[in-house]
Length: 313
Ligand code: TXA
Ligand code: MG
Image 1 (cartoon, rainbow, N blue to C red):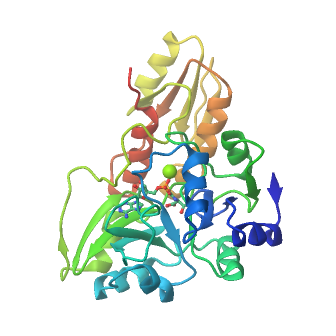
Image 2 (tube, rainbow, N blue to C red):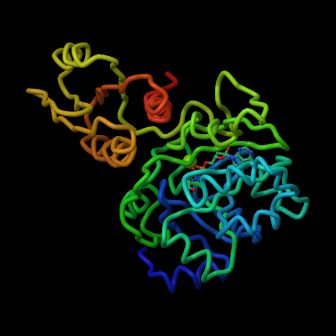
């Protein structure tokens, strides 16, 4: 069900759930202090209760409504990356609902840059808890139509056009002067390092992790196979009868539908989920995907492609 801004504001203020645009992906939003509304988010998404939600706030002035501390390092990162595709995980105040933080002692906060998300935050006067507006483990939505296809027509959606970042925010946990990257995103680890500087102790993890962020995530329904070379992809395509291919930059397959994405990280991220949604809709038996180089600026895209292609069988 499509709703306009005024209706979305009214619904959110009365404790209802509304799918809203952000610059990364569409979020399934509700009043972050209303526990019935929070439970409804988990129910619609079919998300396990141990996977916490991100709380969206209008500006960093509201951080201390939610976080126990806003250390100089956290402030520096907020100043550099907010509003934007960046989430800070900070020690939570005891007043923060344990539903929104899924029992964790921390709370995830983000100031979104999307003008419609900003208008909603300002006009409702609320902080909005919002996970991506897809069913658990499925591909995130970057258009209002994706939300409708994934969650059903009964869910209220505010259409704000296609998301421009295209993949979920970078998540960084900060405790005092220590930080840890929990989820890769278009703000790269090197960008965070550049702002955090040498003063901060970097607690490095081999495998970035946030609760509930297991491998089977962000997946289309059609099996996906990744190829690090165009030649290997072409060879596989020759033996597949019913496949579609995703190529980076120019190129066309002779016997399979071909999709092309720009050969730069921001351009590819913007259209990645949109293209995977389109490819999935073809109901092929397999999607063959060309992967970008493994240089730092491409790591978030590698992460999402890896998850999208992961299957338990
Ligand atoms: O770009 C985004 O971040 C989008 C838009 C809507 O803001 N939201 C999003 O939410 O991707 P979601 O729920 O799909 O992913 C949030 C991730 C989850 O992996 C969750 O485990 C992690 O954030 N997270 C939330 N609260 C956390 C906390 N207190 N500690 C560690 N990780 C947390
Ligand atoms: Mg998600």
